[in-house]
Image 1 (cartoon, rainbow over the protein chains, first blue to last red):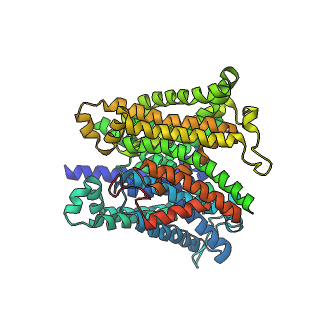
Image 2: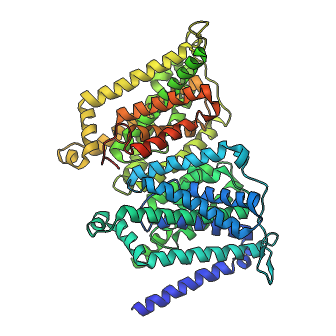
Image 3: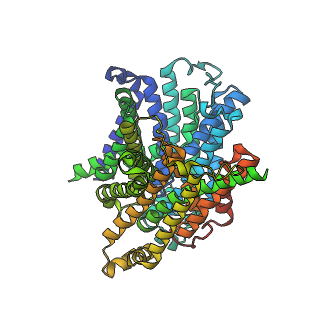
Amino acid sequence: MTGTLSTRKLAVLLAIWALLALAPYWMPPLGGYTALGTRVLVLALAAMSVNFLLGFTGVLSFGHAAYFGLGAYGAGFALKFLAPSTPLAIVCGMMLGGLVGAALGWVIAHRRGVYFAMVTIAIGQVFYYIAFQWSSLTGGDDGLRGFSRQPIDFGLFKLDIVSNSETFYYFVLVCFALVLAIMAFILRSPFGRTLIAIRENERRARFLGIPVDRHIWIAFSLSCFFMGFAGALYALVNNFADPRGLHYSQSGDFVMMAVMGGMRNFWGPLLGAAVFVVLQDYLSSVTVNWMSGVGALFVVIVLFFPRGLLGFVRSKSQA
Amino acid sequence: MTQLLLFNVTNGLIIGAFYALMALGLSLILNLSNVINFAHGGFLVIGGYLAYTITPYVGFWGALLIAPVLTAVIGLAVEGVLIRPLYGRDPLYSLLMTFGLAFIIEDGTRFIWGAQGKPVTIPPFLARPLSHELFFITGYRIFMVVTVTIAVALIFALLRYTRLGIRIRAATLDLEMVAAMGVNVRILRSLNFAAGIYLAGLAGALAAGQLGLEPTMGTGLLMPSFIAIIIGGVGSLTGTLIGGLLIGVASGVTAVFAPAASEAVMYVLMAFILLARPRGLLGEEGMMT
């Protein structure tokens, strides 16, 4: 029984990675383009980072876009003011998002439920406000411009991720895989199991002597580092960092992607992000009232697919 | 200088009264139903536009009375159909629901009334300034503050002295117990939701005369209302009221000395509260935290 299950799991995993690896080949015939695939990957990474906290620790942060945006600005600042190096930009973005998140997480980690959600929204807006107002540094409403991703020098050869969108897609895919591997490793470790225990029954976890607040703080910080990483990649995708990337409505989109795909599933947010991005792209190209479309999507998912698309498929196949 | 200060403090007080009115409605719904109503700003916009639409038929005073009630009725319908199924579930779902509703409402108002802002006329005797020195205190501003005061006083009286209000307060503390005593919690939540939305509608109808109308105006007022609740303390309506007035006046005073920082000051206040007194000014430890 377990043997067949794990082969099935392996097959699913292989299929997912094959689909991702071959995306530049099957997307264009279906009307997509490689840059869209890159965007889906980056936003999926962000949604998975949110889900690390939401789906696996059971903590709802509704202000995670702030750390995504900080990652983007961090990468932008590094490229613009420090040195023209892509890896440095990613590290800087991740550090900015992660360290700020870790510091703030320490203040709020002992809050729960709606109160936690509200405080994270308000704190997230602080960074939106700063990015919006401090125009001499951030470019204000126009966003941070004047930087671009750089080719990566491996000594023997140079990886041209600047002009070749396919090479860039694969570069992002490798980054994506790297972060996912770390995330999966953490979730399978005893620490990750403890997070799930906290999600399932916080009181019992506390009785078992688990320092719940500290675990939640660490999970929050880790997810902020992942978020900063995703944000840095997003800045590289656009060669641009936008204050709207920090806004709470962006946080809402990330949470929605996770919920829509299925937040109890590791791969759910990837599916959610793909559907969300493609749908939003499509809606905004056919109607000016795309906002209603996205809003209606929220309503439908919440009312009829609360466990997400994967959760829905799973319950149907079991029935 | 004194005049400038007075001007900005008055301004801040009026803005603060708005924040407080918004935040009180949010707080009512949050306390009883555990729902963070992201669509609250949307209901404010609906209130404003409804007032604008019915003014030609019922006049300014009629609109002020009727528009908030209509908004509350819309709120009641939304609660009954979309939010009620979510009460038993993780607050995440009602959050996402109202988040989506906010999108739909903003887009809907733009669709019905157009993206252009709408000017709203107010009775001439309210538009006049009080005196030459105090040119910035128009009758309408005083009228707004008075109306907000009356509305807040009524809500507090309702919660304190009527049977409905006592039940709402009791259910905020222990919903299960109140349900076990035979109170229809479903109706209680609906009425409470409608009361919150009524306040949003009233704020909208009042804002229409002062700020004019735009489909996006609700979003801008939402975040300060959140901050008012956090500063005042989740669970305490008096705290919310104080929080709203406090950030209004604080940003008014800051505007005198550093206009650019007038919005930042409320975030600074919030940060200070979160560090020094995480439960908020009047919040009780352990409640909803």
